[in-house]
Image 1: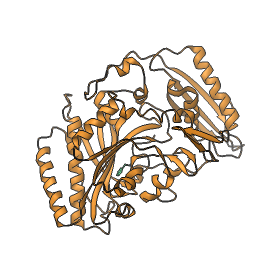
Image 2: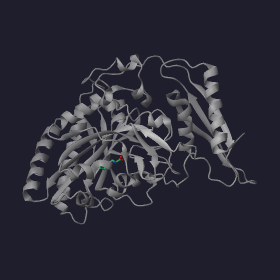
Image 3: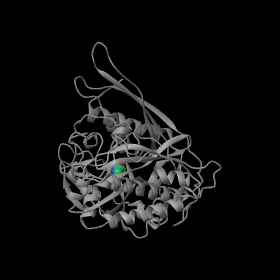
Image 4: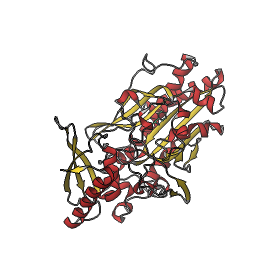
Length: 437
Ligand code: PHE
């Protein structure tokens, strides 16, 4: 239900959600995260299942597909700084305000993002570090990190995933623009030999404007450099594939509060267009905040799981978190190889229907998914809304969800699934005060 750019791209069908209160007030006074204590408050909504992922840092585990993909992308940008050590705890100011997100942007809501408390959240994107890195005077950099977004559960959505942010600044003067032109020529020559089909769009259109403080010629050169650079990366990543069909890539216009013009790239995979990255010309206000003067440049943010799923044929996003030898032993550092699925264990579907408490906001899908994830962890493959309606007389709303329990590693017994389902129901009634139908 939510695409890669996750509502940060307002043109790509953002979901506007209202603020709702925290899942529960049953949090301890403090939470320990990476050996530090943090106080909780009325908006705290991080769950133990989420917190348990923070120390894992699978993007830095040698041999892990995400780590190999990171190194391949880093090797494509050899003269960039490579950063992958930043903590996921950031202030909402850093995640949103510093990047010109409007005050009412849906991404800020507790239904979309994880908050430790009012002052601290889990970063929802690697762009949260743009100002920090630009402030250090870095002109060319890549930053890889785990990011966190509340979401529905299915084979390609997981509330923790990994992004890689890349940025490049040039001097906004004649010599800087000469450098861009040279780079553009070099990249164009390299791309002529490409065996991928790229559907392109004009760089600049009325809905995707050049920033007022930018010389349109400079902005156009930078946007072109961004596209050539990413097309060349995509060629490096996907160009060597031996599949009969050529890889199809398309550029579409997008909106991000911190870039203009902005774009998204989608890749055609298993009959669907998948968003794999967002990018654009960096908003000058971001550079002003970073105390960077006289520069112009681009930034991109790409989703590592999406790309790794395509490159390695990994069918389910939960597999990235597997510690099963049958998964991990298939991969070697630096090598991309088709994943051989081991047998799929049977699914077990369980439905739950309930009435929301009278006169209160109905339970949010993401609250339901987090509750299920808290109890069943990676034993839940997906959760679907199968019915929801409002009773015409009483005005009460009812929801019905179907939970698909399936382990990646073993068969689940009936008793085990029944226990899980029982805990889901108990928690629903205890915490959310719903009435099971
Ligand atoms: N941070 C954006 C996202 O997560 C992607 C992006 C990065 C867009 C950099 C523009 C520039 O959707």
